[in-house]
Every structure is written in structure tokens, then in C-alpha cells.
Amino acid sequence: KTHRKKLYLLNNYLKNINTPLMKIQVEQLPKKMNIYTFDLGNSNVSAYCWTKDGVGKEISWDQKEFQNGVCVSSNVGKKNAALPIDTRYVSFNGEKIFCKMPVHYSKNLGVDRLLFALSIYSKIDRTNESKYLLIDAGTFLTVDLLGNNGFHGGIILPGRKLIQQSYLNGELLKGFVCDSPYMDHVFPVQNSRDAVNNSWEICLQALYQKLISENKIKGIYITGGDYRFQQ
Image 1: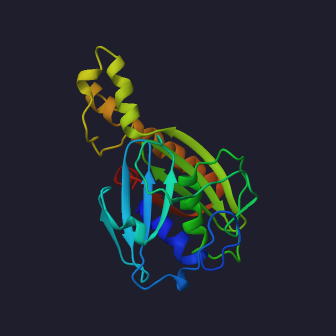
Image 2: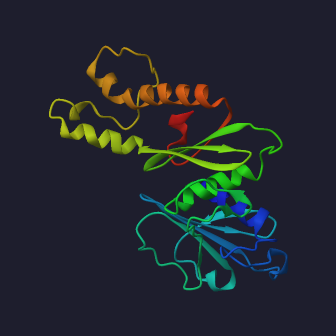
Image 3: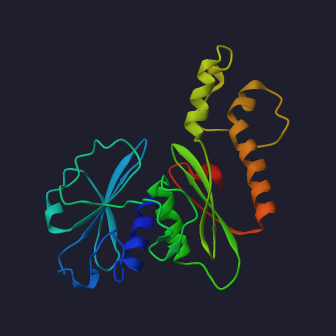
């Protein structure tokens, strides 16, 4: 799902792009040349290979054919991955327009949030004033607002695993932490194990209800490694 953000970017915008992001004419690439996308997050790194017809597959970092393709990277984690020398890095420096999408945010916007928004912006009906929530549940949880007039920013929260790790500081609570939360998110919770493992989901339910009500949200898009806990 993460790499499909980049695939939308490549398919929909590289053909006519006129910004410093990248200057590649996809239709002019040799038939056997592939596009490689690298996703460097805070916890995980991954790579995909895409053919010109949009078919993708996950690959390992030790592939030898990178020099025969176009390499694109989204990097929000530590810059320690051995990427090909000629890799194009998706970057954002506070521009008001990113690949035809208006951006209402400062220059320190993470490119993972930006690409997620761009992939959805390319699909929504922009003739009305509908608003959408974009939820990316990774190491950190980002909840952003997207409308017909572009990306409006949002909030950044600790992800599920970071919340779990915080309970390890409680001598009487750390024994209750489990990898998979119970899915019965009802307040009040009447035992400590469920109170620990359901707290994040109960708080998020209240948050989402508030955001949906106040912003008249039409739809919600979810991605990230912990997307299943958001549904």
C-alpha cells in the first residue's frame, strides 16, 4: 500500500511534470527499463519494482539491476540505506503547489504524508467541497485533512507500538502489554489488561468522531503497517 502512493505519483504526474521533483518522460523509457521505488520509514525499509504497465513486486535490497531502471525514494527515517547512486529523492521545500496539488503547510512536511495525499488527490472529485481524512498508521500515526483545494495538514501521534512501549515504564502495568489489542473497544473498561491494551483504540475512536463531525468528512483513506487496527 505504501508503494502504491509512489505508483500513483509516477503514473499520474511524471508524464507532464514541470517541478524540480523529477524530469522523466515515462512513455520515453526503454521497454525493458523498470521503475524502482524505495520506502525508508522510521521502522522499516522496503523496495518495489514496477513495470511500465503498472505491475509491481517487492524486491530485496541486493538487486543488481537497479542501474537499468529509474530509482525513486521516499525517505522519512534514518538515511542509512544503501540506495543506488542515481536515486531521485522525493523532496518538499515548502512549495505552495506539489505536482498540481495545493499544499497549505510549512516546509517541514514529511514526504510520506505528501505522497499519500497526492495519490488520493489525483482520484477524488475536485468539483465539490468534499473533505477526506488520510490516516497513515506507522511508527507514528498521522491524520491529515484533504480537500478539493489541496492538502491542509493534520496531527502526528505516537503509533500503536510506541504507546505500548510507554506502559513498560509502569512497574505494575508492563505485565499487561500484549502484541494484539482486544477488539472490544467499550468505555469504561473494568480490568487493567484491557484498560492498557484498549486505551489507544478508545482514544482514537473519540478523536475520529470529533474530526469527522467538525469537518464534515466524506471519506477516509487508511494506509500504513498498522492499518488493520484503524479500521
